[in-house]
Image 1 (tube, rainbow, N blue to C red):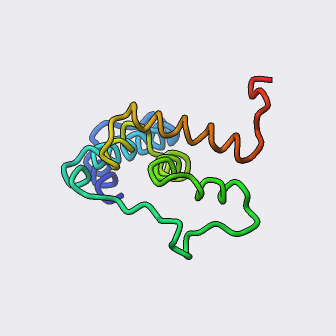
Image 2: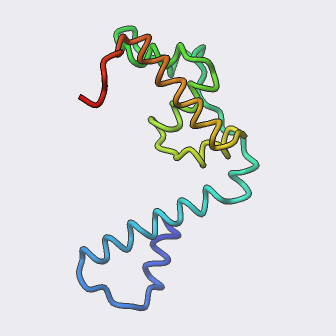
Length: 127
């Protein structure tokens, strides 16, 4: 956050309005986050995705969807967690877990299929 505000302080052009300034800050912050994700540090770092055995992150017994997610195989569960809960894109997830983007997309597709079966959602989603 500090880096983004430093960029704001050093920004020499005037903003047209407060909305323009807000949009500039959001874009600047987004780009800075993307730069961090592309950094050598992130590429060398292994991220620890929570494990089902960890009681502190296990889903509550009454949440059927989370229970179904935690029952998925590790690679599928990691992809689902990073994609839906952390908001990463498939290319970023691929870098985090050391797989190709197409493999991550396959994990997500297989996980969705398994979740549909587990949760009984065989109805046509387009209608």
